Image (cartoon, rainbow, N blue to C red; front, side, top):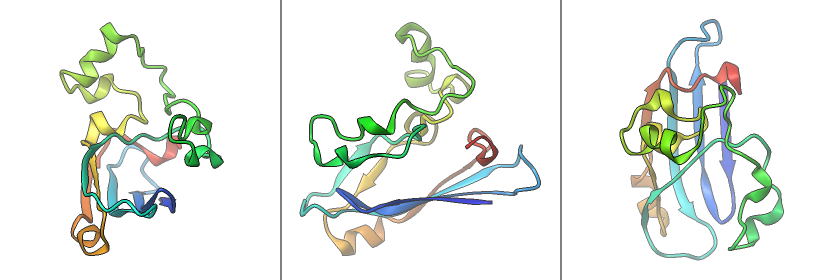
Length: 138
């Protein structure tokens, strides 16, 4: 089974999720393909958070102060407590089982976005293969 997140603006690129459809407990392979600024930004930036949200993003991606609010809350089917005192075990101590399922930054690491096409091609990479994010839940 494959799920693809395709981005066009302000960042272009794809994130591909793959998992054996016959085994809901199999590892999910996550691949980030050439994230590149499509809004004219020329800077190469690192350390971007990324998450899976419950809703499809609307047109608010043009709004710098409220970008992607339409995507709703992070995907959290197990209702992991997000209170700072509890969620710090995910963020600071890197316990991925204490993270929301959609919190890919803290589970898998942060991503990079290129400002130029040739750098974007070099930034393509396999992020991980993990049991911590199953496609049968999405």
